[in-house]
Image 1 (cartoon, rainbow, N blue to C red):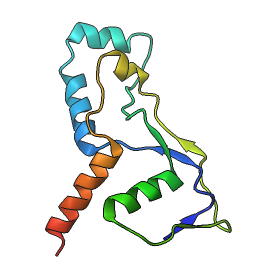
Image 2 (image 1 turned 180 degrees about the vertical axis):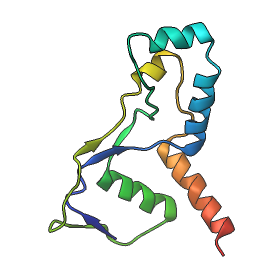
Image 3 (image 1 turned 120 degrees about the vertical axis):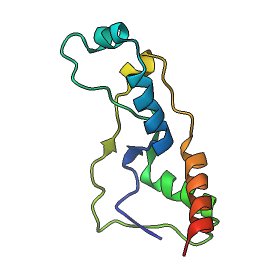
Image 4 (image 1 turned 90 degrees about the vertical axis):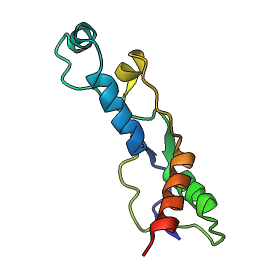
Length: 119
């Protein structure tokens, strides 16, 4: 497997089930609580896992989940892309919401589903 660049850029991932739960959490907030949170011109509530992982660490994690024993190499002639892409989900966290599904568990679940449903 060849990674573009150094593998050092970081990203944040969120399981779709956690995104759905976060959406329902916000929809179920009492109106007064929601209005208090959105006071002061806040236009949105970010949803994120709060966990940052490098592309290299992600590739290693995926290899572990799927049982890949080959090499993971870097193509330094290719760009890294944006050094860091993460959400500031502190507002949602302050309301008491936390994700339930960790990245490795979500990857394992997705891989199992793929194996069971591949044509």
